[in-house]
Length: 108
Image 1: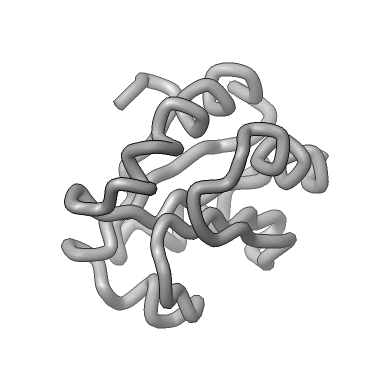
Image 2: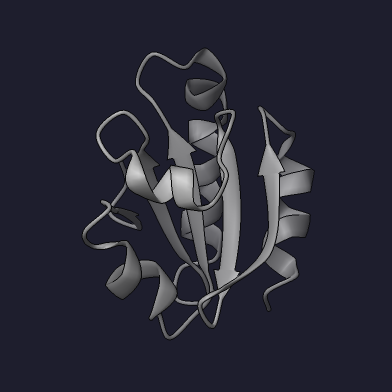
């Protein structure tokens, strides 16, 4: 994982994501999920591109079941964009880079 991505847990979610001073993207994933691995390089690229503008985080759903349940994550990968503690939008599945970029632009 790149230095521009923060690993977030159920216990750190509120402080890292909801109380972030900038918009935050959460990548809900699991190590066994092939589509999650497929979009990981795109998420890393977006973390570098939007460094300082959007906080990019990853949450392992197997290790942190409470937060995905709270936000209705039913399939992975799920990308949820938060701004000011509220959901701006979300994407589910291995989506193309341009869709992820469009998602992030909504928060800027």
